[in-house]
Amino acid sequence: MLTALDDEYDQANAFDLGADDCLTKPFSFVVLAARLRALTRRMAPDRDRPLTVGDLRLDPSTHRVHRREVEVTLTAREFALLHYFMQRPGDVVSKTEILESVWDPDFAGDVNIVEVYVGYLREKVDLPFGCDPIQTVRGGWLPTLTPPATPLTGGAVGVVGRGR
Image (tube, rainbow, N blue to C red; front, side, top):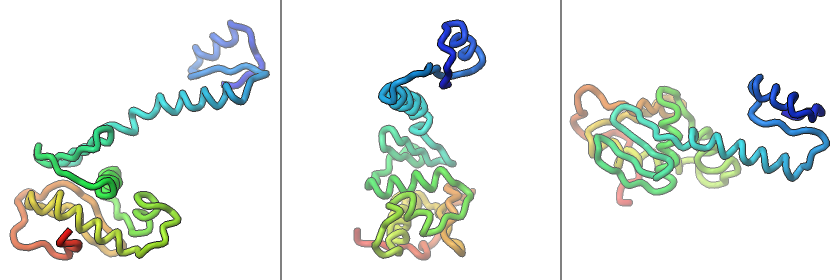
């Protein structure tokens, strides 16, 4: 809260009414920036909390992924893509959305790189465990990420990026 009321009782009242912080005028922009950084740090632990979808667990703070208690080793980009998918289970996500969020909004390379990395994820996170929870649908991918009731049989369709 930014206020011209500099009396200690006014500040105490602001805290009692729910203010997280109180800065009185006149104030230093250096102090304001430092307080904003501190508030941002307080919110960071929620952003790094582990995600669990079905039998898949991703821990952003340690960069570890487990499926059925088995650790799965991923590259940094594969980890970022899986993290993006796990934050949106059940939402269709397009190549453009993935490129802007996982790569860079100004990415100038081939957009098919997304398909390659989805293939890498399928090879590491899905196929060894007999499931295919990253579904290809019109317009992008549907990351349900929950394993089917019975394991899949037969080969996977549309897996790219072999020989990596």
